[in-house]
Image (cartoon, rainbow, N blue to C red; front, top):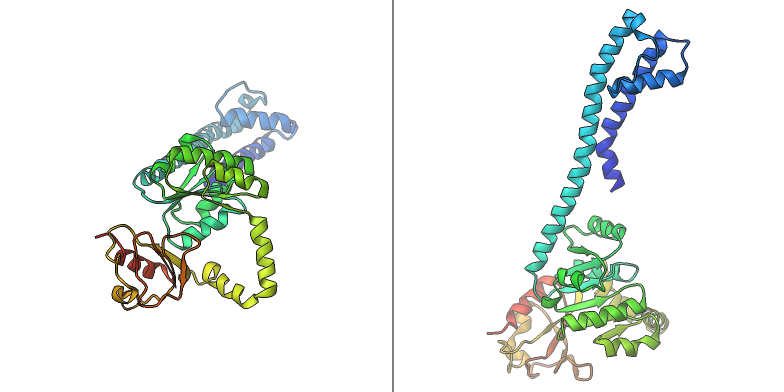
Length: 342
């Protein structure tokens, strides 16, 4: 922001500085015995047309009189130009920020089944990157204006609501009533606890995933309404152990989940009620023939305890089941359309 303002204001600034410097040098040439204080003062009151008085005795020197006349006209034009330039930049900046904010809020009002990522700090920014690269609809909520500017620079067209994520009006501005889920990634466990409680009151049915650094607060977050609680320290410890014991498996999963190839991910699609696939077997659904996807696992009802790995063509698909596969955003979209309700 400061760099942008400087680029816009540096020309009028240097123009004003050059006019003041040349004006002072001219008076110094006419009155070499005067102090620099009087020279600068006379130049300043001439450029600003204040007219405090003739402190140098200009009226006694015809050449200095004509020089002062030219300086008055030049200074008046330069000063007016600089004032208008400074005013235009600040007003334009304020208006453009307000208009951009209103455009973002208008776009959010038309969003449905999106995710809300609260907090874009050390943890939340990685969530934002994955959401953005996966082309999932989401809104970021962040209170620090520096982080907000950083997000706008890194992610073109990102929807960001600047404000306190624990306040009702901020969450409503992010469209919490129409959201599919919320990710509480604030830096403080207590803030995440209060955010979870507030979000659950505003939307009793959507999914809430909360960050919890202290393991002792996990039960409280679950009681407040969080569907899932993630501990970065616990996940980090498990990853260290996995790299030591199963390095190739970790490398493979890392490429699928966080690799540089943004087009390939481990994805999932839930079979909705009245889906075209409901009641059919995998063979009858012809998923591979229509989308090019190989289903690696199938959850019968979306719970953690009902997975069928490498399901065969006789596996029957039911509403509420979840198909897991490895593919890109375009293939996921094809499968979503194939599994859509009649």
